Image 1 (tube, rainbow, N blue to C red):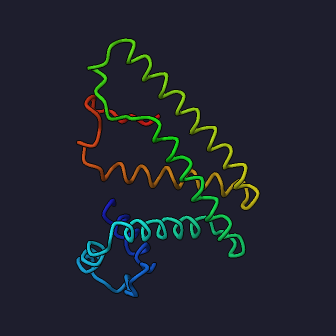
Image 2 (spheres, rainbow, N blue to C red):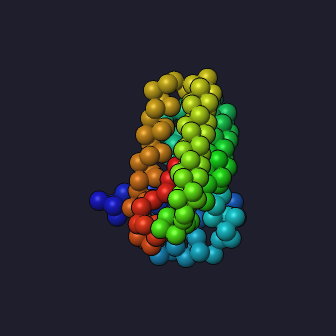
Length: 169
């Protein structure tokens, strides 16, 4: 099932065009796509992934063509804001090596960052409802969770901290 979903996402995503390329991604076999992607600069790969994500979200939500540009800008602003907040918490630590005071401080910091993420999500949900209906905002957040879960499934287990659990505030 994972392979089917991943293949679908790759084919769907590569229906988009990278800035420098005019490849027909859908007609390429996976090996060719991988080769082309590996030859892209990190910035081009990042841009391609961003376009893929945005188009997938717009299609999934069926955003009105007149609202796509405005919503895409707001959605990217939301993602950048969430990323900036998440960067305030360094989850790359071993809890076993912390003193009680350090652990309490780290735990409190995780709660504070988690609250900031929630507050930011509420703020942007309100802004998004100015462009799309509330039902579509809910669907967006469901889609984000689904994509995050799929990405987490693909991560090697070594990407977790020393305790074996994820440290997402």
